[in-house]
Image (cartoon, helix red, strand yellow):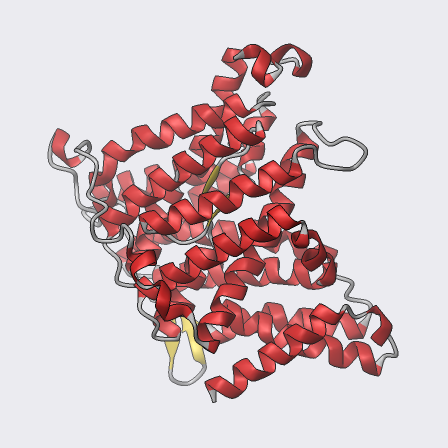
Length: 434
């Protein structure tokens, strides 16, 4: 084992790798409870989604650890689950079973693109500024969902949106959770989001706002059944061949593309694993990520992707795939704690959504705001995601404006042919919607 993972060469050991795996798991354990809540909004069985989330995370992480040998942990992605539930299912009215088939298709395409090397071509075709804008826009959208689900922001007939009832006990619980989580993360506690959820749940139980688990059975139980979601993606695969689903699949693919690339580079850089500014075993890492998406969709969850929280484990010394194997073990162990889902109410998960939004907004600094031809498509990409309640719509509007502003600025030669193709696809997308 030591030889396979090159412990001596990378200056690590079993104890360090174990601590790193546990740290990463704690930093992202919130997804076990947030993901069922988000996909539950789409009408999916929350217990089945909980099991699918834990299993997809465990299997995907094991593939990454054993095959690619990176200390990177995977799980159903934030942002992608919001797009799945709120845009595809609720917004477009597409059944969740068909949406799962779309996730499966995106994973298969991702595998093909990775194996053929076309992935790099497509990534390079999309300008860096728009990649950054998409990440920031998804962050704002996730934060908006958290503010809305907790009642901190509500509908208002006069102004469309307004502040919620801050005297409401449940709203105050969400505000409390947000403050606690922010404090924990600010002082450098890596698993601050997870601990914040625990503290908020306990506070909710004390004041009668969150149901109290009854005995041991309210905490530990058998593994929930996957029957409600397992295999639905395959059964409904024939329903994905529509223009609307084409846009959905492209969005799943696009977001996973850049989310994965950014995470891999960030984690590898922090761990000192980059060589000549290149990522060793990049193909294996990308294959692991895409294979995890196929596994997750088959089980019954939205796109599974690499988590930037993996940097928490790297921060305590994780350098090899053994870190990932340890984290995968914790996800398997978590399968026996599904009763805790009843404790994790929307007010408890809202702070996690808001804080993840804050973290994703970090990419705003990388947009070239001084160039108007860049600022316009980037701005609309970011703004229209929360305003239209749709990640796909935000991407579509931004990608339509990009070639227009660039051509008018005399920079048409800088536009990759693929961007023109996406322009046509998204114009047709809006014609179809109308």
